Length: 417
Image (cartoon, rainbow, N blue to C red; front, side, top):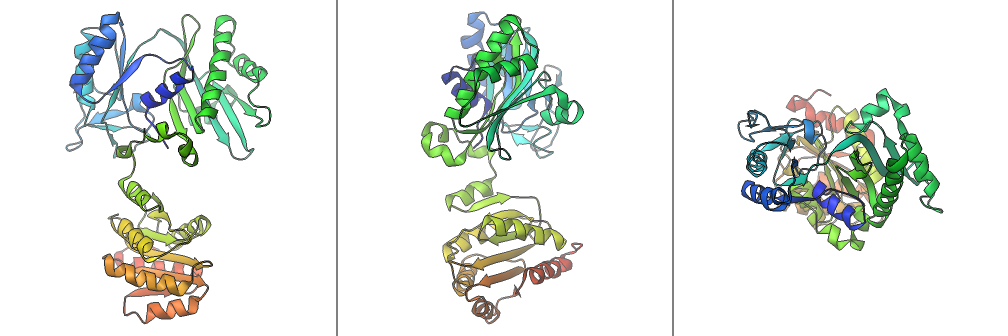
């Protein structure tokens, strides 16, 4: 599960990780009031106003009107997702920036041209930065170990650093039996060419960060940039935290931070019915039982000349209700031009699945071609049920047959196969 920057920083602060003071607001009026009451009155001379969306690249992102797509300007220049305010009436300028952000569209390298609507902003005090670094902790599935990566190239996409100057990325793998050792923290500090106060501050910082990573059951914790101040202190200037969905039952306080506005509406709807659904950008909806079969089915669609519109695993209990809900969600995607149902009858019998498909289609209107491939227990009986139903199915017996029928279904719609 993804969370916003301000939420991530609240969690890190609770685990002793140094972060700056800030507060999330949901309106321009609230932004102005918070800027004055929480910061100006304390003598803060630098404020940073940050759009809160689940995407990176906000600092370089541009803000647009969601209807006209016209760029938004504030204080005489194009508005970005992150704005630093150092002069003038800080509270008034924070109001203007927040007013330009909230309810408008932020387009970044990660959102694509469609962008994301900004519904909240984060107002944070500034600090005097000596240097920016990159830091992340993530699960390396190849080694079954947690991996810590740091680099002197902070504020830059780590993919770009890995491609152009891979030698500037220092990596340390953590043995789950021994945990993160002090000598490994020092190795990372030496790799960043730190000394004196900065060396000690970083060693303390990375140890606290790793403890937070483990305590929160993260799959990734990225701080970019991680900054050292002119006093040699390390601070998490940004924070991206991904929590393992399977561990959320242990963290109800984290689960409560979920922002469904940042998620695909169809994925949210599928979650209500315990369907494993991920929306893709293709034209063929697919319904399967089993993650491995789903991956194979998407390959079949691609080979047939189409593109998968979703990953949808209905699980072992492919009953009428689950099939109907799956159809309803797929048909809500206007890009779907055909549907491929690929079910293997192991625990569930194919003839029951076939009857379930017929009953589900009595509840949901499907106006695109439907290709059905059922294999396994009672597969022959299932195909007979579908072919005698009177409905316009394309019934396939094999994977190759299913691929050919996907091609056949897409061809009349002008899709090259």
